[in-house]
Image (tube, rainbow over all chains, first blue to last red):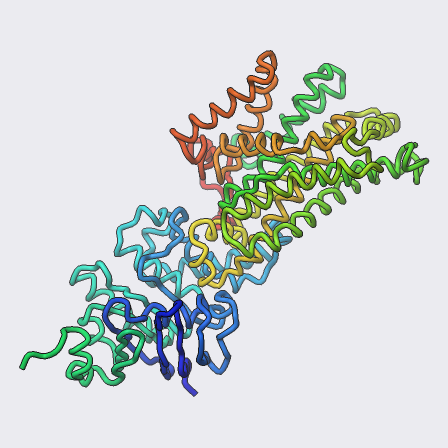
Length: 255
Length: 352
């Protein structure tokens, strides 16, 4: 049984078919890339998995549980972490708070505990804070703990976003263009980070990326979308020579 | 000595405020006008701090806070009048005077609970939609509340509901201490305590995450509906508590007290003090109440001057005087005394 199984996923925006019969089986600790020209429907696939849109048709199973019809917070609670194409951190809050708040579903106390600061709350808060600090340390963000997120450099914000997604305790990580706007050395670091966290946190990773260096460097398998249709799906080396992919990206080959 | 001062600063400060407000009133040093202003300040602190939770921390827009305050005021007043005094409509008191010591606080609590439930009723449909709709719905609710009360003749309709003054007399007849002042003092502390603790807990910080980015919050496992409804109920409940006290300070209530004008007044205090700042709310509630009294000779022109002040503030400091900061951020030296404890350092003893 694959960790994430998507069958015949279709979604329309009005008359536009954003995703058409998308299929995917993602196993434990797989690292799969999703590529395609702009507007091909890549982010839509992520949003469908997370429950932000309700698909017109299809089936999404995560670890055997049906995802369609659940609220986004219920879906991500099952163990799905997510980062965004345009960083979506909680800008006015500190790095530590960004990571702590992502523990929300693991808190297990209610408003009464929060308001009267019961011993239960104190022990939970202590645990969550320790865990967040530990995560930040692992990701090399210890020096930024108490800084407000919006003041941080772009590369660090990307890293904070990944840390926040890890706080959800995911088994599947959805990375939406994590290398966007990074320079070559930062991209190198990012690739290392992705490889490392896959092992460290036993993650399956599904990644959207335009930087071919990242895709070719780390992905075992690549799915190519164009106008919502899957035009190729296979191991990296094959995809590079697939005529349909070359056509979608570069136009028809001039022989 | 210094160490003790540091550790117990907040307690000491509260004691000082108690000594400066309740004790002189008790001894009869303050005339009734000064007493009234002090009590207004306390009630306005409760209202401002609670509205700040919605409009400041959560970034939603509640335009009808006075409606929830009114709900608490009416529920609490009806209960105290029904149980404690002879009334034309409700008949003889249901319990003897001796019970008043229990009935009075219980009525306040029930008023707060009623207001919270009223808030729940509004929150459930409102939070299905986004942003501005809450403003429109709460605005409407404020009007609905006023019209509803005006049309219920049993509780006085537009003329208002009398009797709370006599309730206070019963209390004071039993034990001659300034009851309303004492209750307001502790209610204001409770409101500050509750909102402060809520906003430093990770659960409560979900409210701020929602303000910053609701979609990201939802995808980071936060049950945004639940958090929003909970925070809204909490704020409405506190407003109801403030309303119940207000009714007993003034001695009677009428629907005209809980209109959009009152809601605006509370909003002005929130934005003046700073969104997302409790110390800002406390300061602005105090300053604003006093300013309103000092400017009394201006009559209705107060309501020209104060909104102008607000407009100027919005232009030069859109987040309010203390936007998203506390006193300790503005004056770091205060940190020695005022911990404003973050839950991160819950167990860390104050460093010497």
